[in-house]
Image (tube, rainbow, N blue to C red; front, top):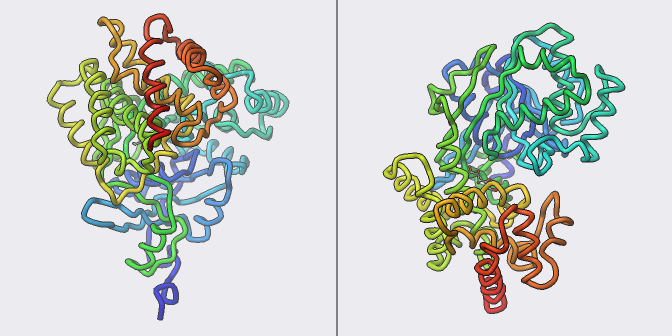
Length: 463
Ligand code: CS2
């Protein structure tokens, strides 16, 4: 009989726990299932902490996960081979549009933590970092909540959070912690600001209630988690005879650093490796600059050389040299001890070289408009403050310009119209416009960036 013939589906009938819901999660993607859901699964008090997760725009994961009682297989792909593990911390899974369920959870006193993984673009910020009140989705949510705070239909993350908080205030339930798990600097303060902007526009009387009852936790999150492929599903089928459409592939490495308070408590995530610190900034910079910065550099520059994945890219001496030059530029500006930074770089090379993880450069290339400003610009600014910007630091911006002009991975960006337009026309004009958009002075760094864009565009025609 074939493997498929003997395959079973996952279900809780095999005795797996189903903890009471005490955590709400918005943005049920692969990363959350490999990261916060995994920490919750392994916390010693996991029996008390179930998660009710809401999908993003597409409800299909809710249907598919609900059909297997919220269970899914995490396929940990180490260099030695895959290790499947069934995760059971999702007690309920809902479509993002199920606002009745969202409001209901928010109004329960025992639900005390809200985690978010909605990507950088999900917070709907303007270039100043506040809520983009011109965004069509934000405008619609504002109108819906102003007209009907109890049942208004909202779609954006800020809108859904405010809808939930209005329900919580009305129910009299107590304090709650909001924990953003996206790669944005100072993400706790960022969410607090975006929410305050929406609350101010919808119902200013909610502001003092938020100040008193809502804690915004700042985090650094890390676990390389590509999209699921048919090969991942086939592997679980052959290893476990389980037919799981919801397999999540991930790497063995995982890190979570948090700062902030949890007024209603939290799982013992610290017992399974999460670190609680006073200040996340040094960890967040180390990760955002060294990991995410080099990821973006490879996504734009290495895809021009014809590479498809991170492991292929890092095996190319040319790409490795670009990555090392980027790290050499960023490292002196980090506040962690030099030894820690050296060890982190070495570990990154090992993680990137893990060929069992097929992490597509095209996936990382997405939404550069949200990523390049926070991954590249702070390093360039730090260098400029000390003298001049290096070739190694500027190459990330140059590669993004070349990418927007059609070289390497295709452009997928929530702001693609605007940023592709910036980079159109002659290289000279394109570089001037993109640098200004990044608030970098073309008179200071323009010449180097122009040369690098031409060089990178030349590489594409020869690769
Ligand atoms: C990547 C991240 O897609 C991207 O932009 O740089 O998703 C990266 O894989 C994670 O932050 C790793 O923790």
